[in-house]
Image (cartoon, rainbow, N blue to C red):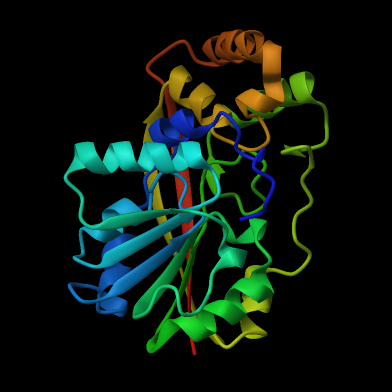
Length: 267
């Protein structure tokens, strides 16, 4: 991920609790496609608090989980200890700093909603030297952002949440110490310019019922509405968003449709 450690400053506890889990069918599909099991290695770049690394460890593979945020790593270590997961080896660092000789025998590299923060060409070039000939790369989208261009999340709470974020933080989407600009080249275009040119795409869809606390916590897990971005206004933000959400729906919660997109890339 980018070297800007402020990107997700203060988000780790919200990230671990409120980010939606990746579909079990996706995890199982990767295990079958790449023959994951004892004796295979998986690298998870931009691992966050382990949303991919932890379930992938249950395949029997050794999972190397890399992230530049020490609080994310700490949350992942805590969850691993409490959840009965497999062998996850946590590394504080950036994908761009990887060295080909450092992690031998890798079958798969996964990146869950993190590739866009990286120097993508450099990372793919390095991975070409690290991943076994029959291995590959799996890019997994997230369904957390209220600013998603792909319609990754659908729910009645989206519009009011965007409005409150804009009122508190302005019209430009924030990211760390600056603002966010979406990469001009799509991930598929970048992959086609790399060694990993054989692409397969799929989409997984699920429905969840989110409480007001879930929606608020999800925003506090993001780079654009992090506790660091909000600063002293965090309590006011939490109160105002909660109030507006309750006005919208004082009942059982918000039915939310989440789409997770997968790109599998091989040589």
